[in-house]
Structure formats: structure tokens, C-alpha cells
Length: 77
Image 1 (spheres, rainbow, N blue to C red):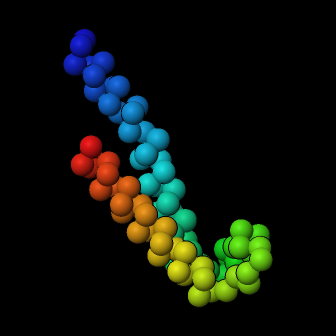
Image 2 (image 1 turned 135 degrees about the horizontal axis):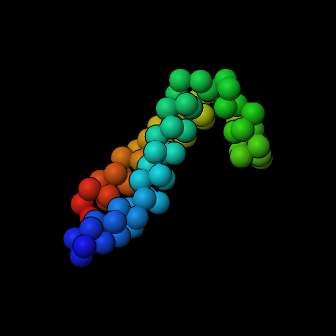
């Protein structure tokens, strides 16, 4: 019973970070594969600046890099 409780606690402690990694990867890959569909979202998020396919690609690569860093943190913890 004690071992089960510890495993469940560790699983729930990493659940938020795991979901953040999945969301980051999904948005990053969506930005790389379908930048035209994400253009309206980026026009709102990058309001003072003009959104283009180039900026969406750059933000997507940055999001994927952040997801990789979060995954390294999750594995090393």
C-alpha cells in the first residue's frame, strides 16, 4: 500500500509538467505544419507587430525547443 501511494504521488506531481510538454509540442508542430491556420491566432498574440509565416515558424521552433528543455527537466527530476 505504501509503494502504491508513492507511485501515485509521483505521477500526479509530474502530470502538470507532462501536459505542458504535450501542449507545447502540439502547438509547435501545428505552427510548423499549418502556419496559415495559426495566422489569425498570432495576429492577436503579436498585436503591435505583423504576423507572418516566418514569425510563426520561429515561434514554433522556439516552442519545440522549450518543450525539449521541459522534457529534460522532467527526466532529470
